[in-house]
Image (cartoon, rainbow, N blue to C red; front, side, top):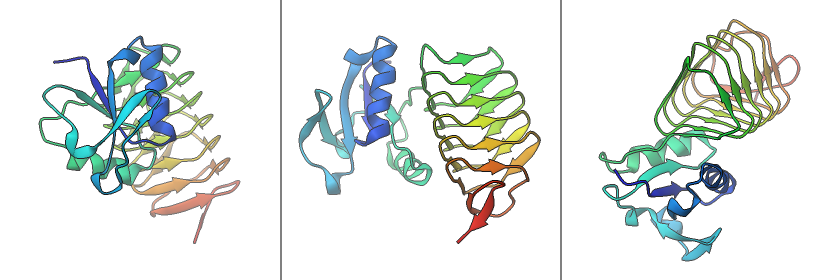
Length: 205
């Protein structure tokens, strides 16, 4: 399989994915940024052409979805051709033990720390300086923003979106489709989808 990479998305995290690839010595393998055909605008981003999603060639390129929103990231993953091969990226400054299982299409950014017996699903994103303790699990399409601290034995569902510098007590269960606000402190299980903010974190809206 080719080492060429196509990044899906043209926003902030798509450019951060490009930074990870550059730091891995693969910056010259980025062939395109892709965006949906209905909003496509021909231009360059970081010196790389932006192309419509329909121009992706799955037999010639790997794919990484550089979109922070979990639901949109899932939508793009479903829309891509079934033969698509997804690249999995770990920044060279991330600390990750051999006892971490990392799902395809996931991206681990600079400074992240993951200890032992951790399982991360497909298309997850752990951003700058996030820390994950022992025995945590993440479902598919989870986003963890910079500076988040997750204690041991936290079980996340799918499509979780965690804000910057949130903190999680040990031994928690977080259901699917939850948004955790910036700086929130989660001390109890979350069993109902929704948005949770504050110290301690409580549901809003």
